[in-house]
Image (cartoon, rainbow, N blue to C red):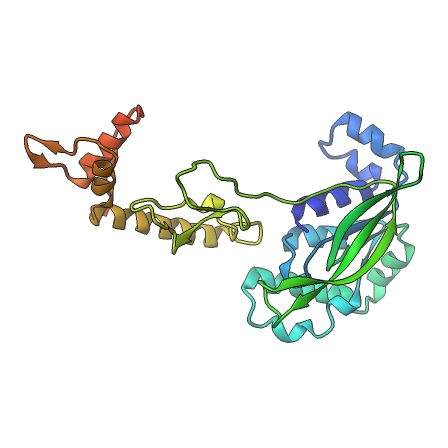
Length: 291
């Protein structure tokens, strides 16, 4: 369950008179005018601590005009004791989910919820296993396998099936499964299951001198803020500098068969970088090390 799933639900449930004031396309707006969608279920395989959406998108859904939020209270009972040690973005997100699931709204908020004609459900620990039809080729429902979490509550908790299922009647189903890293070089050690390069602290295993860009790292999802990404970029830069000063670049160029000597004298690492760029038909404009 990520931001895209919440965005789709928000568009389906937002009153048309509000969407008219946005830059939504004309054909989409016309389709939504005749929409009969009043209820949306957002389903995810794992639990509340593993959701991939951000607090901004969740807050927009919770405050959506004419719409109430319905969470399974059993998914959130006892979860407060684990919030303290969570990273700040995850902590704030989890606190908001707990408040929405277990809190008792009052005043204007209670009145707004009571008058709502639409609703959305957050269903954790559900894996879709089959689309059901009505016998005439139309979707009539989705069969979901019910999961449970294994081990101590944490962001990295795994799920196992309970071998139980439930069915949600529906006439529309949309998939939002995020992204998965794919191998782009058969010579690089790639973990198909996790969608990441095999590495040790950013250095690709068994491939001296090669670092992995953080764009493929699974931790760089929407919950990671700009500061975290800056820090990861800094770590990647430090690893690259270690390669240069540890003469990894020079060794890599030599292993790949490039001439790394000039008049019998070995090139510097920066010289080896230039050799690699030129021999690979990249136009090298300029570069310099900033210490």
